[in-house]
Image: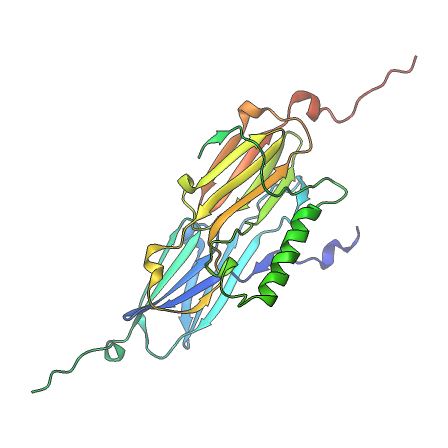
Length: 117
Length: 163
């Protein structure tokens, strides 16, 4: 096989996502198994949330692969945020290979009841 | 996570060095039937990977070094207690059930791509292994199984004496 140099050095994967809307917030869950918590980058720029992390290759270089590919995995995904998201109140937690991002809604978008005088 | 002997059940991924990702015909056929079934009866988004109870197959990578076979399975969102690894007749089976998170039953969903439900994957190991020295680790949604080869399996080159 001489076509090694044309192969990318990483496996680029858009992680599977669930996006849930709750009354007070949005919850985004991303499957990113094997990541180191402190290497996960999540940032918001101009209303776009970008999440990325590189997970080192699953196998040693000299291992013979019997199934699938062995390259570092780069998880990368962007979400454009709804206008009611409070960009200053975002929470992220990584557990069991799942990144959970909680995006709180801006106060004045929250449902409220108005009392009648 | 218990490692125990059991009878193999369900589908089996057949693999060897010539056909790295060949799956069994049975499993392929089943998959096709399921697709057709979904196509003709109701909404494909009703079940399966979109939150139903149908089985899904986790991603599995298998590699071989001089001394060991290594299996990595991606099981994001699963707790250690929810995964069962068994070994029988040189076939490793990874099974479990991923339950939908409790807090997920409310609100609206804009995307639902992550899989839930029960799963089972079996992998036939091509050579003899030391069954009592199998190592199984689970961290951050990634299961790592190390299956050390027996001494005779390591010895790839056999000198034949010519008389």
